[in-house]
Image 1 (tube, one colour):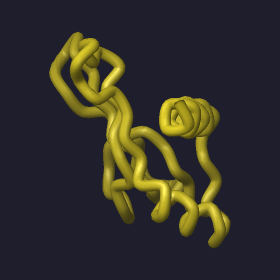
Image 2 (cartoon, one colour):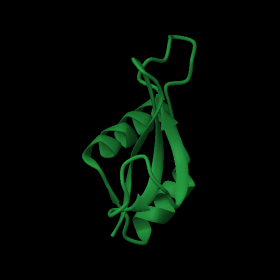
Image 3 (cartoon, rainbow, N blue to C red):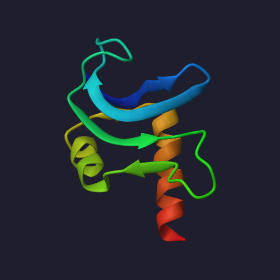
Image 4 (cartoon, rainbow, N blue to C red):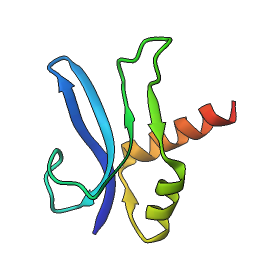
Length: 84
């Protein structure tokens, strides 16, 4: 099964997450199929905190990829931010 989930990066105490498409059997920070965007929970007011390639996200969802609950929440945040 193909899933859309977060892959952790960054330094200790300063997390940075890539939003990736990967096989469910692969470990969290392991090999992935495609990088769709990023999430930076420690972003300052003038920095970009989240970016998702909506066209690629739509493609992967259409072919059956399942998003993790956290990624679902981030997708909704990004959509709300784009609408505002």
